[in-house]
Image (cartoon, rainbow, N blue to C red; front, side):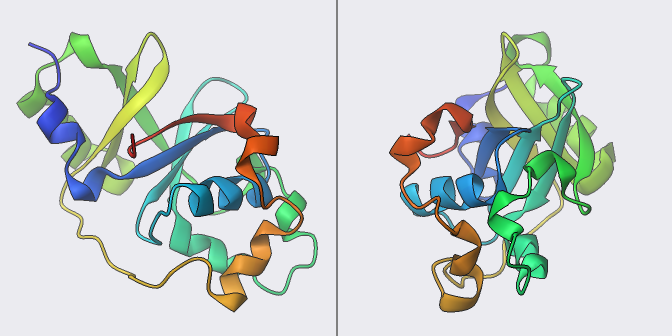
Length: 159
């Protein structure tokens, strides 16, 4: 039995996944286009094929850096390396247990290597502020239209 769609669609499992070479500005453009919240996870496919995560609210640490929009997301200092499992390789309860034991309590769920969801265990969502607020929204820089940069988007929880 694969990981259930119901488990993947829980609010706490919201995410936006991007390629590691995407910039912070491009990730923020995806965030805005998907009307995401600060507690959503940014899931990054690292250049070596591994996965790392961060919460979008953690991008606020880049405020004041005029070059923040151009920083590749794989270079972010506060990413947490996490494991990934193929959706059909494990049952829901076993995957949730694996997420509870994982760094950051997050497990990336893939199908044929592409992210289709995350499981976040033991965490609560928080931070209802909109990323479009003047201070954090600046991080998007010139990358405001996701349509211009859509190739960096690997997946999201919003369909």
